[in-house]
Length: 138
Image (tube, rainbow, N blue to C red; front, side, top):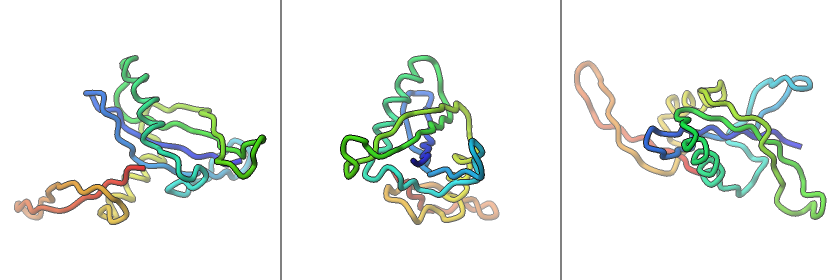
């Protein structure tokens, strides 16, 4: 059994953006010790589809901002070689430590580990110069 989490943002206009995904690990029962990211326990899973379906419902209820959904994944008992099954077990409507670590890693790496190119500007001593930022959407 594994414990993946997916962090995303619901924008004020209802758009959903994946922040990151991670596999949590525990120090003892029910105590998270840290995480590995990106998550590997749900291979080939479209994180955007999960985030969009949850995000759309939350937006209808008036929720915007940071959201992290905690899952448990486990082998399919009817077909152990099939894709793992998963259940949502918790929903945090705030910026979690795990989501913050994804943002921090993105900042430190200047997003060299991503796929979609976005332009932004860095202000260096009063001079703004273009920089590239890439965002990974799974």
